[in-house]
Image (cartoon, rainbow, N blue to C red; front, side, top):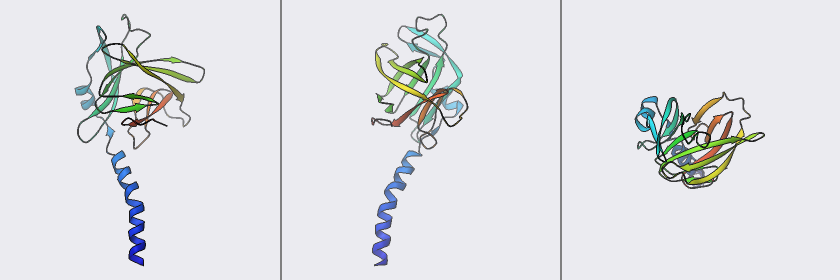
Length: 174
């Protein structure tokens, strides 16, 4: 009877442990990894726009797949006002309800009353991929120009005082 009870308990605990293990395999990318992965000048439609590397942030898995972003320096470019950040996606991710496959993207945002309306575009074509709403952080987190938090900490992308949740893969974020 005791061995049956222990077996049942293990069957209930092990799946949740393996899910936690899988989630925690992504970690924050180091500045060196971000420097290697992200371009100094991002190809955005027909222009190559300079990036602000000190704002770079990303996560990386044990296989070297990275999801990273950086602020674009858009002054003087036609992208000014439409795009603010460049994203490199090497593993599928769903941000809010926008699924992004492997590729390069740009995003831009517009402030609403108490949220940001964040639009995602394909970096090479400029085609819009979707819009999500980023909400004000309530936990008193410090303001970040841009940060992708590892899923083990907080599975969200932070822009200023606002955040939008993400999930790795093609599921809808909550």
